[in-house]
Amino acid sequence: MHATSLCPRPALHRAALPTRPTLSVLLLLVCASGSVAAADDVPASAWSVGLGVGAFSSPFKGAKTEVIPLPYLAYERDGLSVGLYDVDWRLARLGPVALSAVVVPRFQITEPRDSAFLDGMDSRQSTLEAGLRLALESDLGSLQLEARKDVLNKHQGSQIYAGYVLEFQAGPGTILPGIGVTWQSSKLADYYYGVRAAEATPQRPAYTVGNVFIPGASLEFRYMLGSNTMLMARFSMEVLPQDVGDSPIVDERRISQGIAGLIYRF
Image (cartoon, rainbow, N blue to C red; front, side, top):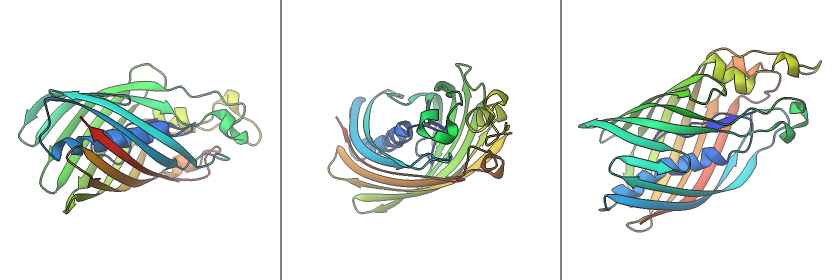
């Protein structure tokens, strides 16, 4: 079962795997919404709403690519950003460096009912993760470091993300290529990609996943339709390590996501 969590801003990705990919896309919209504010003067507090569509591939055997609608809603005020899929509270800022406390849900994306090969496995639960995010911004782009841990004791693991996103202006448009890597603890990776002894069958033997590093890359395009409205499109891909690829429930190591949406800030 694949779970997903939200992405750092700007970020490559922040989710886990097997279920419905609704969260990943919404998180990407969260990442994009901040640029609408930068386009013009905005009040100390602001609401953002959006609607998009996303397509998500799955690494699990028998699971299909899903295309889903993606609504978005968030509120920002004085260094605090609260959305449906992400809470970011800025603790300190020193020049281009900002430190924030974050709370991010990790949603279950693939259920056993989504694939006959997963039938008989226990559902992996969604959870809430909390941690710190450090961002360094420059004229060329943004460097982000983030560490999070499960606070509801579902997978009981942790994750560390590091990524860099470049930014190129093209008239009213912005192009943002990025690269990053995510480290997941064995408890986190095994919870979603492993097979427990009680779930084992002759075709699906028990399997344990250790600590893993997951590299990824993304390409995003943003186009301002006005001072408060932005059109965005984004494609990202991650490559699961061999340790995950050897799991009997995984048959695709490359995970791709594509989204397009419209965000309005008022």
